[in-house]
Image (cartoon, helix red, strand yellow):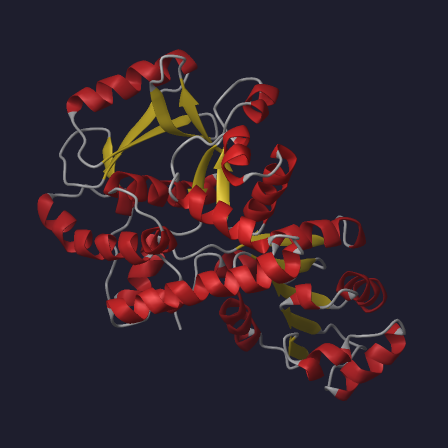
Length: 388
């Protein structure tokens, strides 16, 4: 079993009293991650419940928490000493926040939980476990995690490393596969292109059925579907709520609510323009990116540059706040990370691209710049997408 990068980070919080929640889109590997941590835990005073299983879910149902305690004791939990309860798919149990709070407050139970929808978790857990939880977000595989899945015996050179043409040729074919089929574990491990594409289709279907249709509770699911397909064709571009509203024949507030849902369930990401004024950022048009390049390649017709740009965004999103910058003339910087580092994506980077990026970033007070190239280049200040 390959360990995800977030695994060790979660382990550092096992001794804290707080509930630990792993959230993210479906099929990113949350259940596997939770099971790995459970298996590694040395204590025997632990219990793993899959809330998709009716019998497991029934243990935590009801308003009498002491009766729930008896059911848990029947599963060999000893409440006279510290115990660990692992819960998978917590969005399936509506009373879970209050149950978790009760056992955390009265018995010091350590909860480790997964939930597939940020939209649900953020609203449900805001008050019940305020100040008593840590939320970890799990995404599709990064490229280094992808390599660990594909080539477990490969020793990845430590960063930073100077990539010569030989080292580039070693990684480039794998990165091409990563761009085409994306980073969902269930896709990466499939041996053929046909199986990978079927797995991607299944992931999209599962998301639509379980998040949009069941969790979203929208009156017109077909409009949400049309919105998703429309947005895919515009990945990496600025979007206008008013224009989308006109194209789909629905109100602007409705479009905005659909976008918020898609973003809060990890399917899309809205990147705001860089500004010293936060209010200006919110008002101006965002750029849109998607959870995974494999889904984009399967359902949209995008050029290589847009797919690569989406992959670069995915590599940056876990590092902090990401913005884009655009002047009135239309000239722009693809990404600004944490207001201190500028990134521009290019299939092939040239010296003129570096000069241009420096001239745009300098007036913003940003001195750290990087050209992110897909193809091989020996230009200074250029890095490759797979080295992010």
